[in-house]
Length: 180
Length: 92
Image (cartoon, rainbow over all chains, first blue to last red; front, top):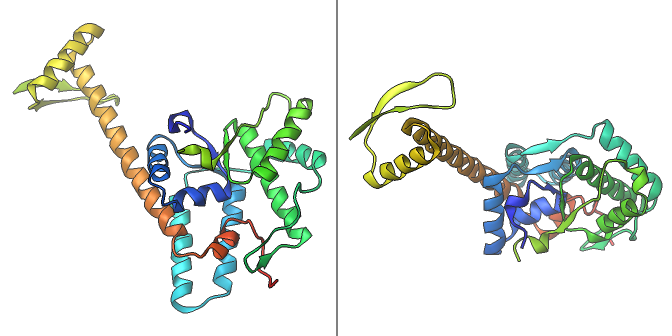
């Protein structure tokens, strides 16, 4: 259990939606308590990933479903809390991380009827690097649902701290640990 | 009934008359004595804290409502796109 009072935290893209969709009463209580204490902090990259997802879904539907997705997209934008920009500091840290970790630590995903190409996996990996860099610059623990990528980044920072002066370590918290 | 100066953190102050539960008033008077401040200061702080908490609750309620609307009615496969877990859809 992670006390929401220890926040604020930076939320990775999938952690943000996991919290909003969870039906677990303990998770719902945790999220409600957190929001009473802090703004929901996310990276601008999360907004990019999310709105890109809405755009892809909108492009393939019509009629009522399209209106439903457009409303969901607007609700998402209405609920946004603190959005951290990709500024010069984040860019510098992300550049160091990309140089240290040019390749994604795991192969492209194949789930449901969806499969990603190597190129898409690399893009997703770099987005995760930007989000980790944002957490590092903002000095916020990162709540995530993606240990494969973020643990690799955390380890790289620990191994080469001289490349991240006055920053770090990267604190990671898995969503499953929040309320349980 | 007790008359008091209801101060706010803002520079402007207004005099008003409040009717308060005697237990609460007694507790506020004890705090004021212990801190060597006047009763209005304590009451103003309590009101400000209550208003802040109410604003936070209202805001958190709005955010929760927005977020639940933003992510409801999507299949697991659609959520993979919305989460950026899969960058594009493609048949196996």
